[in-house]
Length: 285
Picture 1 (tube, rainbow, N blue to C red):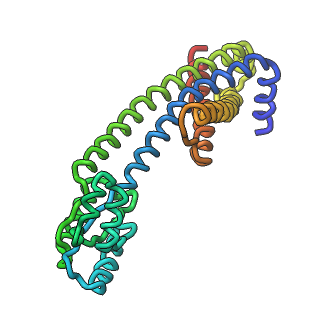
Picture 2: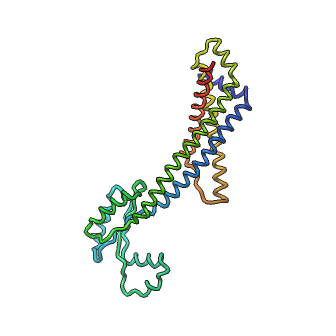
């Protein structure tokens, strides 16, 4: 293992310009992929913020005792899909309407009786904010004796589901395309490094070195270049994020886990590129 590490270090010292070029090429390839990743992350977070508004509202029958409402709320909170339940009284519903529907202020001021019913506003957990789960919860709420009507904005939730599916499909296809381009560019870059040391490989074969022995320093070199390129790509992506966040619009950056995964992906792509390039060269010599 020490010999492999020494050979890898020698490779960087023998051709520092080529090594720097390889790392830079890998970094910019991953940087382009990282920019797309930033776009995908922010789209998903935006959709997630909109999805937080998905809730099921159960309107209660007038005259329902508070004790019955409290028992029903406790039962609903036990549903696996439910994150929280809020009891909105008739007075609170009217106050909310006066606050949110200012164009109807005159109508609300002239009311002699409150026409708005009390309700239980049911907030769903993030994993259950889709039309199927919302419909299932609404059906169970409608079966309760104290519930008069249930609403959850089916058409709006269906549109949100379609948007989420489209974003996921486009993200997968475009992300795979960017990843493939990055692998090709990185593989070509590492192939240049292999060709640069072709004479050394030929000499090692003449003295009886096995393919595995020859391959190991190149694989480690590919991993190190990929990791360095990944770190540089994350730094460049952060610079792009900072500019966008400061001058264009509010944006979010990768989490620490996502950034670490990006660096690890650079190392993995470097390993795959080295494996393919070295294997092709060894087969052709």
